[in-house]
Image (cartoon, rainbow, N blue to C red; front, side):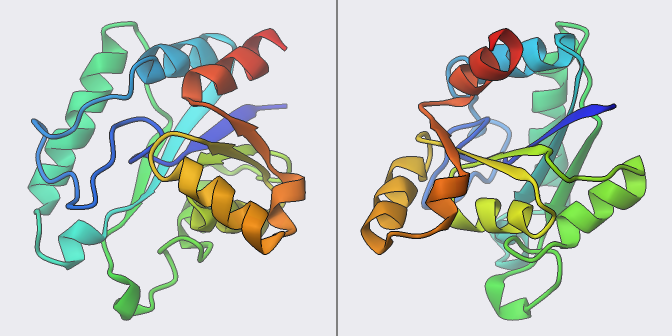
Length: 184
């Protein structure tokens, strides 16, 4: 069986910003996140990124700027001989009502098609409710990290007594997720 993990980007791998991450210079990894991806990869996981990037649709940055951010991530991983199995992104705004913006399942549809894999039980890691909701549509195993918007998401889910919380493992950050999956 192929081990796969799906990671959200902003707030999970890199620092998030309410004003969007618009350039490669603004794209800064969360401490420990790159090492966590390296450990997951070396433990046999295929690592995929699935990320909403509405800053493109809003005109805050271009496709080229997004590619530069992703190249920065890939180069940080390449220095440890690690490659991602894919980066899937939605450039649309919520108003576009597309099928690929999480919580819609379009990005995960693309992952299943491109990698020819069943996502049942696959770990999906995010810092927002929409990340978890997208994964549940495919019977993924949701993981919430407290980085990025994760603390607020956890508080919101507890306040609403949201049933998703019962299905979700919660960790402080991606490094703790790697500790759990690689050493647990």
